[in-house]
Each structure stands twice: as structure tokens, then as C-alpha cells.
Length: 301
Ligand SMILES: C[S@@+](CC[C@H](N)C(=O)[O-])C[C@H]1O[C@@H](n2cnc3c(N)ncnc32)[C@H](O)[C@@H]1O
Image (spheres, rainbow, N blue to C red):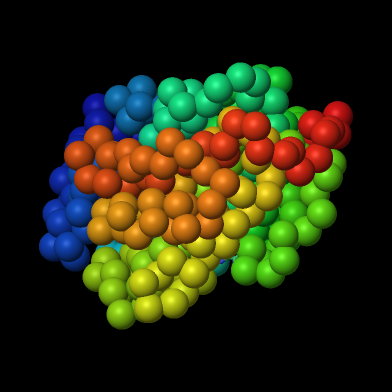
């Protein structure tokens, strides 16, 4: 195939794939079509730079397009997801990180006081938050806690790729006793995007309800806040005095999560931060300065 033929084939493929994805109700058909075509063509670069196509291009593109038409998330098809500066590894059965969660890292920079040497990511999933801490704060160490064995294994991979030896993973259920983590305490900051959807609020998108694990979505209890309350309990034990908790929640849960932090005790500066669209999305709380510290060693080096 000569270069003009490649250009025509790509243009036709883009038009046809975009149309098929649009008809299937995919939200961003042309962006997804470009990504599928690049994968079928075996390139990471821009499509305009291609001067040849592999023999299996048509068959590969057909297979990928059918998967996306069935609303398999693009990140699962590609096996990766962008998150801040990283391309995270993604696998079926593990929650796909969302762009709105990226804001937690900006809030961490704005709200933290003093050193950011040890950070804990609770309900880590793919490890998106913890891996970004390792990537963006070169001296920080991260402990990630996750209940699911497959997710914990993926967290470990993404932490290692981002932070070479500075991250570790604990597989645990946050609803149990807070274990003795003297080696991780005192902790400077806790980031968390826990499950928080109430059981009766079923997400509508097929990508979410058929592909995100339900344990990653539904927070437990009538208000969906059973796991988020456990996050607050862990933060109260692990944070050093003056350390900050930043926890994502649904836009209707601002007052309830502030109330849960106040009720638990041990926190001040309890506030709600909005996302970029102005909706209440993050609980912020500081462990009261002067409170007794849980441990006196930072994350072991
Ligand atoms: C909404 S996902 C978030 C994952 C990741 N933090 C992110 O933002 O992409 C919530 C994660 O919490 C984990 N999880 C749910 N219940 C948990 C529990 N009781 N203890 C620990 N982890 C839990 C789920 O397995 C899932 O990986």
C-alpha cells in the first residue's frame, strides 16, 4: 500500500468507526475511534505519521470496534488509562480511574502543611492516587490499602512503575480493626476515593454497571457511606497531628461526610471542596494539631 492509499484507508476507517460507535451510543465516538484505529495500526503516535498499515489492520479494527460497540470501556480495551501524568495499567475486574479524581492531588498540595513524606491511599483500586503521589512527589513513600486481591496486585504494579520501591500495598478490609501500622505512621496525608454509591442508586452507564466491580461502586449501608466512614476512622488513627484527609464522595454527600468526620472527632478544618464543575466532591479534614501521634516512625525506608 502506498502512502496516499494509507491516508484514504485511515480516513475511511475513521469515518466508518466514528459512525458505528455514535450509532451504538458511545459518548465520544471520534476520540474512541482514533484510539482504536491507532491500536489496530500498532502505533502510539499520531495517525498522520503512518505510512503503512499491518496486514491484519482491518480484522483487528473490526474486533476492537465490536467490543466498544458493546460498551466495553476504552481503557479496558487498551489496557491502560491516563491519570494525571501517568498511563496506568488497567485490567478487567478493577475500577477504572476517573478524571475527576485527579483533583485530589491538587487539593493535597493546597491543603497539606509540613512534610509530605508518607502518604496513604485507602481503597486504592488500580493505585491511581498513590502512584500519582509517587510520580509527583519524588521523596514521598506510599502505603496503599485495598480489599480485592486482583486490584491489590495491580496497585503494586502501578506503584512500582511510578515509584520504584517507594510504594507498598496492604490487602485489607477497611471495615475491620485498624491494624497496627506503626511502620507507616505517623502519616502526613491520606487520599481516598472509596466506594460511596448507595445501593438503590444504580449507575445508568453500561460501561460502569457491567464493567466496574460492584464492590468498587457501592459503599454499603443505606447512605452508601459505610466504607467512607471506615476511611475516616483509619485517618483518625493514622494521620499525624496536622495531617490531612482528602476523600472523594458523591455530590449529595458533602454534609453527611462532614458530619461523619465531626462525629468521629479528632479533626478540625472540616470542609467540602468542589470539583471543576462546582459540585461538592471532596471531604477535607485535618487531624487536630497537638493530638497524640499514633507512632513515631515515618514509613520505613
Ligand atoms: C471507587 S474504587 C477507587 C479506586 C481508586 N482509588 C481510584 O480512584 O481509581 C474503590 C476501591 O475500593 C475498594 N474497596 C471497596 N471496599 C473496600 C473495603 N472495605 N476495604 C478496602 N478496600 C475496599 C474496591 O475494591 C475498589 O478498588
